[in-house]
Length: 234
Ligand code: C5P
Image (cartoon, rainbow, N blue to C red; front, side):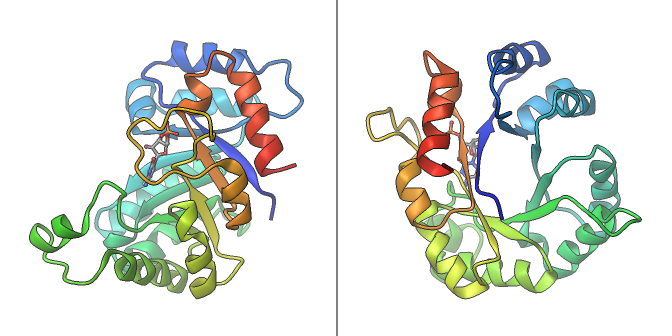
């Protein structure tokens, strides 16, 4: 499987994301683009089609979680948008994840990659215990949800690069790890807590790194993107 750098395009308008992507028009390699809730809710499905028409692969990060029938039908809509990767919350149960896969599968049997969110990195162990009444440790919950995702037939999980080795150990090397929390060694950390450089993410076996502000807020985003590709892919 090809490793790649996914650029988190956390913009709030069509104009902002397209003018950002215009900077890459001379590049041989088209960045893999992550479209999250902010942009999708602001600009709608048409922005997905437009970025796809420009030749980018797309990870549509909408983190679905609902009853199985609703998720299945929603996934069928995303399938028709021809995205390359999308995701859901493993919390929605194995039955929901299986329904999602059914909805996502095209008549010819192909489908976008489907990735599970285990526990959000914003959820701490005390919050999990006190608010969600989950008594297990965070790593146990992450691993258990990853195993559920694999059992449902999903392709992988979103996790920290630091968790890639244990996820691959438990779920197999073919189970994809999509890993945010990536920063250059000489760059700003911002609100990310546990960060990893692209080089280290590669050593740890991440399959895709998701990089937002180190590229989108860089003085020269194309140079920052190239730097990530050289460190992680080449
Ligand atoms: O700007 P930055 O590199 O921190 O962006 C990381 C991207 O990955 C953001 O779109 C963020 O929402 C997403 N993400 C994350 N941590 C997770 C899941 C998703 O940072 N656990």
